[in-house]
Amino acid sequence: MARYKAADRSPRFLPVDLAAQLVPGSFEHALDYLIDTEIDVSGIAKRYVNDETGAPAYDPALMLKIVLLAYGRRIAIVEPVFANLRHNKRLDRFTLRTRSKVNAQWNLYCLVHNIEKLAHHGYRK
Image (cartoon, rainbow, N blue to C red):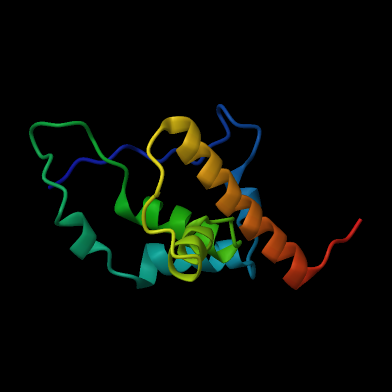
């Protein structure tokens, strides 16, 4: 049986009471309920082999809650930016070789990406 770090929900170090934050009917409450009661995370837990040795891991259910909450709240991710640069702008590798030249080439690609965003979405003050 894998060992996990204990998840403490009491407001000892943080001024936030998690029980008060999980309001029934909210996305956070539904996510907490589903992962605790409906979703089987035993397949993920099988991968942790730290029974006698090794540091305790975070509970996979807790980590799944964090990841799904972040995606649910649309926390900014950078994959679309790199995908645009790689596939649309064809930046598979840098064509220049010194650090200053690579930095200049990267800055130009970023500038093109940002100008393209302004052109598509407009500029608001």
